[in-house]
Length: 286
Image (cartoon, rainbow, N blue to C red; front, side):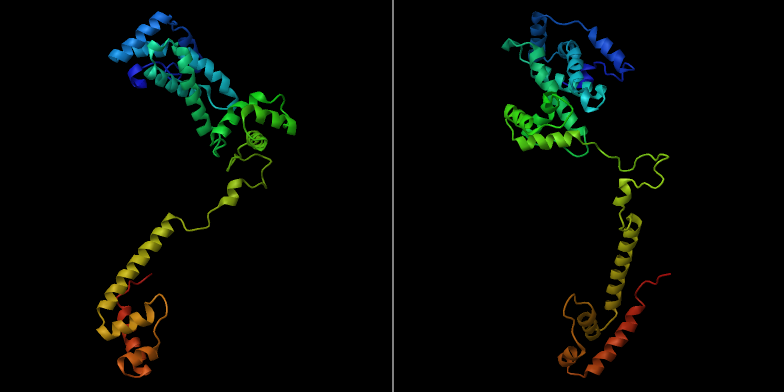
């Protein structure tokens, strides 16, 4: 079952959130018998029209639930649409034979989707990643009796009630009372000498164009080196590789002199001639 299959209205499709709320409040409520009949049609026959009616009759429930989460600063229209996804999941799993009304069953799914949306979008930095933190996140605001910071006794009382540690309560209160700071806020008349946080995050490294140019230069040099070495005789190539291309412990002139049974000066002459011969194979730069 998908949203497109049910084709129920959204705030955007009705032009405004107020129009949407007015529209869903006009949808008729279902009696227990109607709900059971529609649930059986959906479960046994996959009757999409039956599922649509179940969803439409409970859209006002999503609106009501969404009002409980307006304090997080997120658009109510977004909260409603996420809650509607939870409602559709509830209808998909609804068993009319259990004797439980859909409104009670759907509440869990609606709240779960809204919770996930809030946790994904309330802050760039996640504030609730464990089960205990999620519990604190959604209960701490309502349990505080004032806007002042919690005392040690108040934090301990809340911790006992929620089954968490007092220090976790204090930490969550601190995180909830913080505010996100824009990296690059809009300038104002008073900010002539101010620095935005993004000013301290400047990347001094090379940009994509410089990196690409450097990589191409390295590729050209590598290809040129291969061509240059291919033009040398075996002894000259061995001397260049041993003297210049080893990553560690390059050979000395005397090492190679002993290897070939000649003087170190002779090795130096061969090396010099080979280097001159190789220069013509490398790309020139402007």
